[in-house]
Image (cartoon, rainbow, N blue to C red; front, side):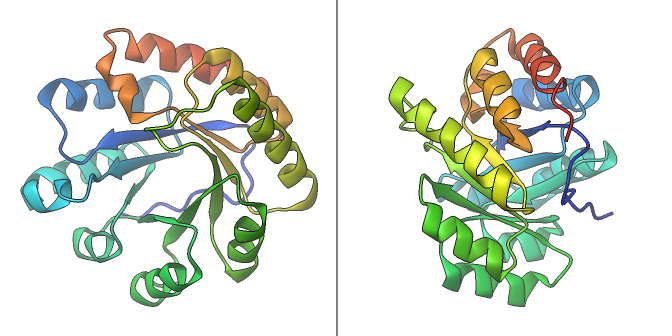
Length: 216
């Protein structure tokens, strides 16, 4: 089963991140989230070693669960995406990496790029064929207030010029999620650390409600 992320979403949707080296608790939370908020995508994040440590059968179960819920499942490693039958890959903003991913995964794969706040790299990747660009901080450097404002400006600028979807990356608060959606973000990606909270599902439901009011 393969799922393509929509080029133009009817409304802003959630893009979830979950660790490839997932715990039983996180697996249960993810299953609940897939039903409760129906995200467009789930990215299995990799700290550089996780995909090598996790038994392939365990990752297969996670991918099957995500795809079975109707969402695309991406990973952060190009070769692993091909071997595991994931729907695509999330890569840094690098044209050589994009070309390698497209050559290996094919035209139907979802290939998205983490662009931070780099407008030029985002434009080049969009013109080359990336399926989405993601603007925002890494999980180790979540945005301060002034950085959040800059991301908000990026969302507005991008949505007015480009058709390629944009993702607001590592959005922690419901208020920011709503603001980014109103500014034109196609997808909102909460940080993978959200699963550390006992109220993760409730927060995701509230975030989904906040972003769902914005029609494309």
